Length: 386
Image: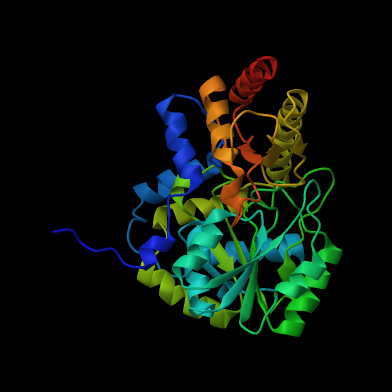
């Protein structure tokens, strides 16, 4: 006798990122599908994790996070972005994904409509589907991905409750400019919308651009749920440490869901995050950004040379490439062609669209060690000569 599955389970499928990672492992290839930053973990973060475990920080912590970490997150936002938030505005969770799940549970009901910009991050869509929300899609266009104001206005209906942005964007690398955010703030005020702003790549911004958290704008301060974390900047994706910043009433409600789903984020690793926030200076963040700007240039130049034109990312560490010149009936077939010919794993573009919009695109993650990235470029060059 088999156990029947819930209707909810049919809404959650294995992500293409996971699928291509498994395919890459099968051929012992170079994984440019999954967004893992290959830089070493900063020494103060490692040392603090060891010390916390050795000195007994191994029990449950509060579902909203350790007070010291909430204070450190609030202090960083206040110093770096001239905000005036208190620790009560902060909740620590199991990664930015966990923070999104808990805060979405707190403010959205089944049947609420939420707008996503395409190409979108698949986990955002999957989470909202699992919660019973209806999704509306607004498409952005490469190579610069400008905010499509007219299409966004047209997508808003009487049941629309929220908009989700990724800033800088996974997968497109778009960085929202101040005038776009100001217009978005006016729109959210006019329609009484919540803005979820995923800012996990906030330190990866290139060509002199500046990351502007929407919550720093007056029109969006009380309407924004900021999502971020430490996975990318500290290279600790497996530690699952993220956070949400929102008005205290949202944080209080979201913390109850955080408790229900996760109980708490890992206690000793929260201590490590405090060390990272308080001991690493701006030079660390500038160096990380500079390294990834160099890798972006190296990889995008390679893609251009072999006839896979990249949409040069403004931020984050992914690039969407036009692969229409490759053999294969669709993006999945083209991704498998590259994997079989070179051992390089990428993500089919349709993973980031609700329809066939990405059928001629692939996403690559260039946040690899320098030697691995150089090898990947050499392998792709051989594809161009084939």
